[in-house]
Length: 457
Image (cartoon, rainbow, N blue to C red):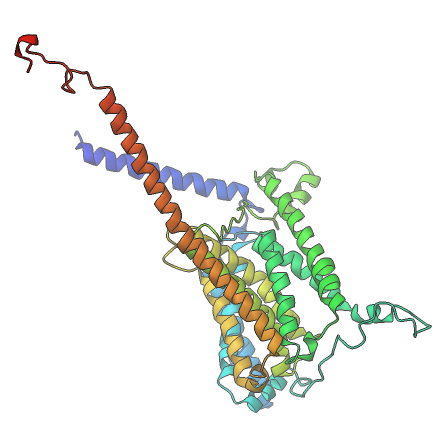
């Protein structure tokens, strides 16, 4: 029986869509690290079975301890683990797929758990919140002295006969390597040299401005600009850009592990599993439109706020800098922040901005704001210490300069350019009319009398 043309087109379109979907599935299956193995499946039934067996064992076989504190801790940890298991196998995938989508789903669930913990701390009193940290670690919950990195700022101290450069060595500790590695990872996340440099320099200005609030921000001038900006941050940004250059030039043609004949090729394929599946170069283009300019300014502001929260949270919650919770927070932001920045870039790269912000970007923004609210609630006195007069003048001049440049760039300059373009178009149209008029024959312009000389006046 002959089909209607519309039915034939619908069937052809459905077949083309099915073939494209099948080809995509085959490409994903063949390019996986363990093609044809169990690593590609979600194992929802298996995880559910193991979870139920564990709960049955705890309920019917294991004897419940009589320690209330231990039971509360174990109950909270078990609840978090159950939520993480659910999220890893059921949450929606993000933009990253390497080394495995479940890895990034895990960090999405960790961000949810961290945000819930922050909200719990936010709703406590200051004393209860600080004592709750002792519930996590018995060593916490006591006030800590802040270290001052300022003091004697002489690079060469002639009075010290043992070591003339002791001031330099005193400022160099384990955080120097952390600065270098941190900015290398931040560069890989942001993927833009100018933005990384702006954030690095602006944070040093923030440390100058807020050293009257936190003694930890008090540093020598050469510690700010030589040790931090040029050496640690600058070298980290340089190495990060080199790594980005290698990723951009690297060929992305994937092959299944078991289809590689040599052991060397298999080991190389396993190592490359921890590199991106494909590469996207970030082009933020902040000056291309007012929307992108405001979005990039907001992104830089959130980045700086996350950096400041690192120091203020330690201060208000009485956590030493070397505590494992501080390190875990940084590890969290490295993983969740990388996905969040990619989702923000995709959000900005859509025409007139996308309608929906990515799930990880939404969670990271909520985490940063909640951390700052905790700082405001737990120590409003420190945050409201008045800025020195010269610092206030500096920031007023800087913000005023940014505001004036924004008005000139996106309002005055754009209006002038549109006026010039409109005027150029009108002049071009006028020139075209004159050219068309000049090409019309004389008989149509009234220069020749078609009735002959007898009828001339």
